[in-house]
Structures are given as structure tokens and as C-alpha cells.
Length: 201
Image (cartoon, rainbow, N blue to C red; front, side, top):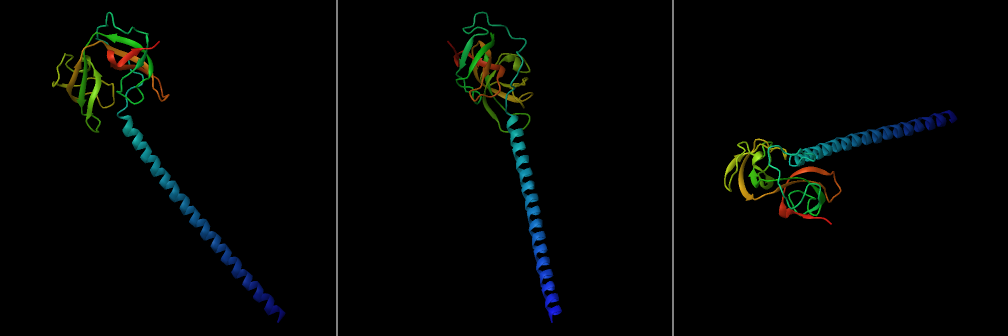
């Protein structure tokens, strides 16, 4: 009788232990699957973010452009090379009220254009500013003229078809400036019109 009781107790314990083990394994498997699912979703989010960054970067300007060749230097510009200035333009995000310096001043007309980027995306409206050396024909133009762009100011601009929508007299200023959001300093930004900058005391 005692033996039967002992064996019965042992059998019951074995069943209980087996049940606990099976439950633990099931929970572990469930957690593993959940972790894999979360990792997969994280990967999808990262891919989505990367795509967004790539997409937005196609419309970003160059942060360290070179000064152009082939433009006549302005002889007596209102703002001299090296002069400290404040930017009033809103061409780019974080440009308005940014502190900067004049990098160069050129005796040339300024052109605003609408163009379709060659790397996809929507039509860019009223892009400011370009000069005649940014056109494949290197010629002066008037509002309404259609041109082909020979410029890499922005990604997708080189070779793009464009229409002149505004023409302004120079000088055309190249500037260095610190974006108002504290981002990377922009060197040799092309271009600003004279009424888009002011002297900084």
C-alpha cells in the first residue's frame, strides 16, 4: 500500500514537472518568435527611414560647393568679400537670419527657374539662384526662356530641363553661413541677391 502511494506520488510529480517544462518551452518559443517579429519590424522601419533619408537627400544642396569659374568679379559690390552678414533669404531651411560671411561677389544677372529633377521627384518651383554659366549655352536669358541646366548646385539638377521664371540684376553673392538650427556650416552657397543679405555689426 505504501509502495503504491509512493509510486502514485512520483507519477503525479513527473506529470507536474513535465507540464511545467512544456509550459516553459512554449513561453520561450513564443518570446523568441515575438523577438524575431520585433526585429523584423525594426528592420523594416530602418529601411523606411533610410529610404526617406535617401529621398530627402536628393533635394539637398551641396554643403561645400566650389566657387564658379567664368564669372566676372563685381568691382564695387555693396558687401565686400569677408564681410560679416546676416542672411534674409528663405531659399533653404534654416537660412533666414543665419550668420555668415561673403565668399565672393560676381557681376552677373541672377535667374530663378522651375525645373524637373533628372533623378525623379516633383517639379522644383522658383529655384533661386542660377547664373548664365549654369546653363548649357552659357547665354543670358529672359523670363519664359527654356534652358538646359549645367549645374550641380542640387542633386538632380545637372542636365535638367528648366524654364526661366525671374531675372534679377546682380551682383550675385556666394556666401558661407551657419544654419540657424546649428547644423553643418555651408560653404560657398550659390547665390544670394544683394537685397537678401544685410551687414552685421
